[in-house]
Image 1 (tube, one colour):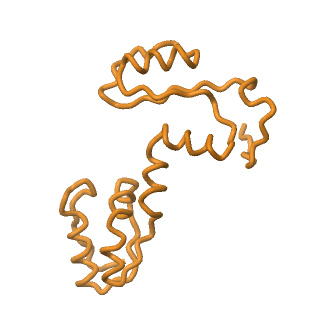
Image 2 (tube, rainbow, N blue to C red):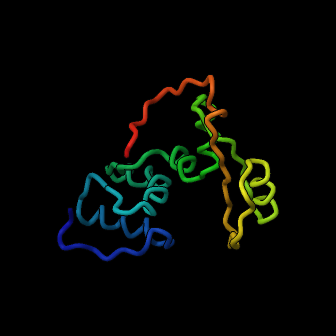
Image 3 (tube, rainbow, N blue to C red):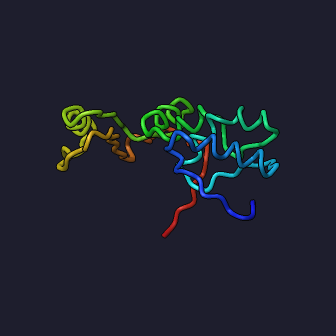
Amino acid sequence: MVEPPYLVPDAENTGYTEVLLDICVKEATKIVVPQTTREVEVLSRAKSSFAALGNSVMVSDEHPIEVANDNCRLLDFCKSLDIPMPAYRMGRSREESVEAARHTGHPPPRSSLQGLPLVIALAHSSQLEGRKPRFHAPRYR
């Protein structure tokens, strides 16, 4: 922790990384720990800049974070590991999402997508038959 605290711009602001780098120099820090989820991807892209100052950034590398933050890429990755997955399709428009819903057996989306991608997934026990998961998830009641 640095005292006194600094006011920094939002992680989406173009000056965010530069402000943090300046603080690291002024305060001779060694570790940077993100405080919000929005900072994680930004800091992962800037790890080498912090490392050049002798700082470790407590985030994963950029590629795993990008995959984890993209629902369809994450589902594709899990499927590549033979993790039982529901049927899914990605819709980047209302029309594609309606088609994805039809493909997976869901009713079409009723509300506006507001330009956001939508992943439609449907799980039936029949889709998982004969597949052995590589992990155990506890059941909560």
